[in-house]
Image 1 (cartoon, rainbow, N blue to C red):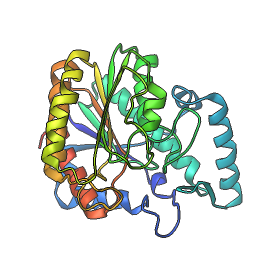
Image 2 (cartoon, rainbow, N blue to C red):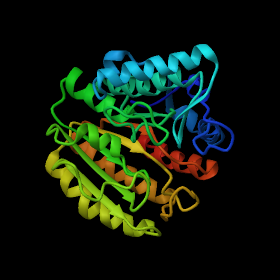
Image 3 (cartoon, rainbow, N blue to C red):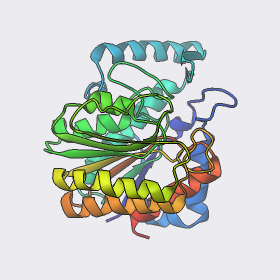
Image 4 (cartoon, one colour):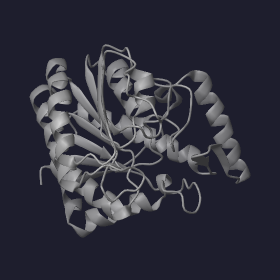
Length: 311
């Protein structure tokens, strides 16, 4: 079986303005790297569908979904742009892009559970892990990974899923949605203090939050993951693993101050895949989160994809 690569051109049409780090060129850089390095032949290309309202409401409040839909559809009709918060801007194409990003995660989940592919990577934007049950923030509108995890549990009937988040920023939205849900385990590592300035104290017993100080090197992060994540994942024995794959902990990325490199992302993915093979029939769905220096992002995603695809 192969690795699905799920994306859509709509995801490049969401644009938060000149100079914004979460830019359409991120997806283009990943695409260019994959083609230039011959990885394309190892991937199964899939166009992301539009998520349905029922998908979104697996992780988000009905009122929030309705309010955001009305706002973003108004922007689509008017052609205007609007700041949702100081970091998060919507344009006329944001609604469709957000639906494609969430839809990619749901489609990936179904493909992996149905054994159409072994695992999947969703090359999508906007990202999702800061979106809480009822709030957009941090470049995020819908929480793609949380929606997919709840789809696996509530729609597809899995009993236990794990979320792994290695973005430089804490996945506060995913924690908000999944904290206290005994069917889900979330393990994460992130720079602290750093936006969104939380996570040092977990919100639930099913959260393994590993805050690390600025300038922590990749070798130290590996040790923390081995000591903190791996025993929890082994005890939990997830039936499927979802990855919030943020690559902004790379030492070249100036949105954080951690010291990871491509080899560290390769190592983390190998450890995730090892757990998935032993406990989850190899089932992994990974969704792009952060990573804002285009060269470092493309190389790091490439390292992640090579492990997923086994090439």
